[in-house]
Image 1 (cartoon, helix red, strand yellow):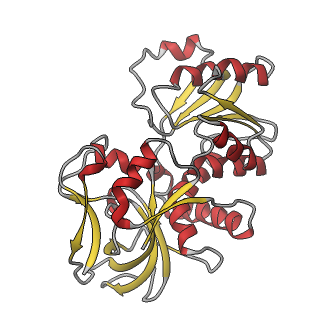
Image 2 (cartoon, one colour; image 1 turned 90 degrees about the horizontal axis):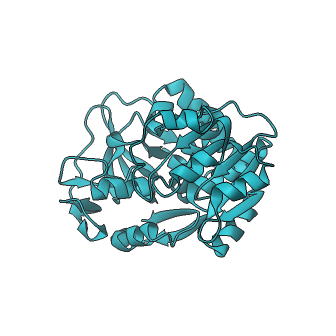
Image 3 (cartoon, rainbow, N blue to C red; image 1 turned 90 degrees about the vertical axis):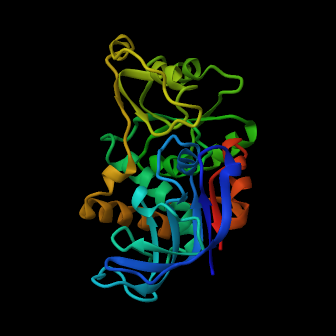
Length: 326
């Protein structure tokens, strides 16, 4: 029997249950996958705690890599035995499993240069980094960014990609150990928000100007510091709410802070078009396959340890990427 992590109610990590499941033959447009590695993403905690509402009971996880072991009618983009990876949202929910059915459409064929574990650690994080670097803003060499959670999975990829584009990267972290990790992956300057004023330090580092773009995955606790770190007419990109949702505010605040721009993007809207998705995938795989961008997998878990994995993630004990190894 296949195994999967499922949830019957929302709440803390303890609501996750590891159990046997039956996997039927694939229907039209579906494939059956045998997973090799599964990605652990902060977004998974939003499904678990109810921030992202889903019908219950349900599976959890939106990213994994593996081998196609059965193909349903009408599937033409993959064949039996293909090495694949995938990420998505509701259409791929249920990745925490040893085997599963999944729609064929989101599947991405893996080149031989990308290992299964690497793919599971970077498909969502890597494609998120790809659209942040290549679609959100027309970056020019010499531009500066403030990157919150710089030692996290997305943070480490964005830092490396930003340096390839000639950007100055200021990263924020919560400890000196994480600061060392961030510096090793391209951060020119690191601000420890545990004992430093983020906006004040950013102004010092930029000669009072502020940065061109802020990537904020923290949310409530960093929102005002992010606004105060931007140059006039700068861009705040809200990519997560690890500390909680941003409080409601009057848009006139953006005018008062320097006619700022603000966006809350979602990966799904940047990979919905197959041609655009293929372009982002191609660029990501090229950078990783050539070694220009490294993927740090710093935590490995067994699938049955999903509860502990979520506890580690939410307590900020992790750096880089985390995966479940099947």
